[in-house]
Image (cartoon, rainbow, N blue to C red):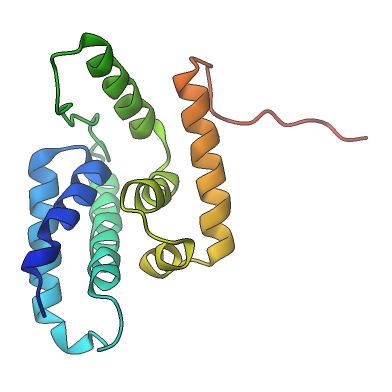
Length: 165
């Protein structure tokens, strides 16, 4: 089992998911530790990255639940630095996207990051998160709409409800 080759991808996803460099490193470490302890549960012939991301997602959700029980803030503001800070407009755009991502519900953010950032298929994303493919598609559509609304400066990414007679 070659975990080392998957560390950059795990770290990138953890960083985008948690929004904090230190929490991301802890999450990656916890993921690798659990994967090594549970290595016998890995089914040969399946994708290792999908299995690792599923472990990471479950650990992250568990951590959020613990934090909520302790009445702590579940998520800090995202603080991913742009690669090139030389262009002020690019830096502002990156910060706008990070802020908009931080405002998404965890379920929507996880789906959006897996599909858009990690380039997983809907089927792989469903397997990682343990949800049906249709749920992946609806969460992704909602996440994209909320992100669009937030970036357009609209007050809320919530779609307005219409009364049907």
